[in-house]
Structures are given as C-alpha cells and as structure tokens.
Image: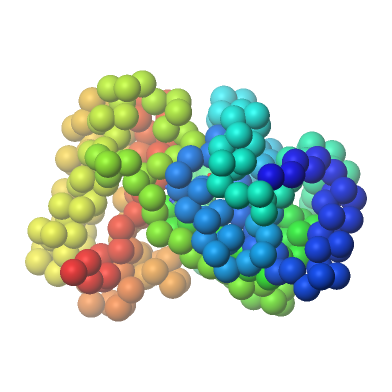
Length: 286
Ligand code: AMP
C-alpha cells in the first residue's frame, strides 16, 4: 500500500506504471472503510494490476452541512485495513484544495435520473458526486472503476456521466455487502448506537419480506404503503421515501409488469442518521 496526497504525485506514479503496461482499477470512497468497500477493492485487484482507492469526503455532494461535519473520518485505520489486503494498492487522500483548486461550478444534466429519490431529497447531491468523480476519473484515468449497488441511483448517475463524457472507463457494479443480520454495510452505521444497529436491520428485513410476500401478489402502491407503515412503527425510525422503480430509468412504476427490472429503493432516518438500501425484486434469488 502506498499513500499519496497530491494530484501531481499520483499522476507521476501512475504514468510510471502505465509505461510498463499495468492496468489500473479505481475505487472512489469517502473513507471509514468497511467490508463493502473492500469487496470493490478485491474485485478491482482481481481484474487489474493496480488498484487506486481514493479517500476524500467531498463537500460538494453534502446538501446538509451537519452531515458533512459528523461524517466519520479515520485515514490511519483505513490505511491499516488496506495494507492487510494487498501491496498493489495506492491510496489517494487529497486535500480539498487539491481536488478543487478553484470552485467547481459545473452543472450536469442527467435528465430524469437524478430528479427522483436521493436527487429529490438531497438537492445538488448528484451534481456534487458527478463533479468529484469526473475530476477523480480525469486524475486517475482508470481502465475500470468499481461502484456498489448499495448506492443504486449513484451508479446510474455515474454510468450516465461516463457515457455523456465518453470517458471509455468501464463502470463495474458490485453487489451490496451486508451484516449477518442483513443491515447494508455503510460508513454511517458507525454513527448508530448498538441498539439502533439492531433496529436498522429491520430495513432489509422488510424489503426481503416484501419481495417474498408482496412482489406480483399485491399492488405496487399497497407494497409501498405496507413497507413504509411497518418501518415507521420501528422505534426512532422515519421513512423518508420508499419507491419502486424501473432499474434503468429510475422512474416509479405503478404495476409490477411495467418493467422487467424492478428495484425498490428506500431512505430512512434512524434518529438523526440517514440510511439507504435497495432490493431488486425482479432478480431470481434461487
Ligand atoms: P462511500 O465511501 O460511501 O462513498 O462508498 C464508496 C463506494 O463503496 C460506493 O461505490 C458505494 O456504493 C460502495 N459501497 C458502500 N457500502 C457498500 C456495501 N455495503 N456494499 C457494497 N458496496 C458498498
């Protein structure tokens, strides 16, 4: 593992590696690494010679300044963890001024993809994500970049951005890694108390139950109503949205048969911590 803090330093290192025809995989993160991040890193190492892991808490994607302030940060722990994985990892941990030497005023247009769900409840969030990821792609110029399906809408936005900018970078989606109790791993889980972590498992439990019991059996609106109601009854939990959408366009569907790719996406507050998760209804689990 090598730690690099500057854009110039990283560019130099990577141009040396490219001269020997080494391929570069890229995993952008905001740190506080867990097994979900590591699954992306391991896949990247399996498919490329080198893996660049960026650790940068990007201010432009936080619509809530309090959320930005309390976002967990521990670069030493992250580096220790990555050291145990492979010596083919370069950690890029830039300062804000390295990434934004001047304010980024670019506005991206993702059509309807970013108008719903996260885009609706976190105005400006995906524009900030696109700003930082496009900047990081330009610095790293990876062959492939790895993103988790945990952030389902983000993945759609990144794919669209890579297509629009004709970057020629292969975007590789990776499945959600969960705790044994089903809770999707997230850096924000660190902000939960032990009892909240147990309560939080109800999110994936209800999603799974709805797939087993309601998919194509009860209507889409009834499913939305039922999952939302059950979760709102959990101590300290408030559902911000639960939508059942076409997995490509991310637009809400009214009927299970409106698309062959059906995904349910949810955001809840548990106390002050915001958690997201999703389930693909149309995937055959067996
Ligand atoms: P973050 O540090 O939260 O910005 O996440 C960095 C990358 O890791 C994103 O592509 C996320 O989708 C992915 N990721 C985060 N949590 C998980 C998880 N539980 N399973 C799989 N990928 C994840």
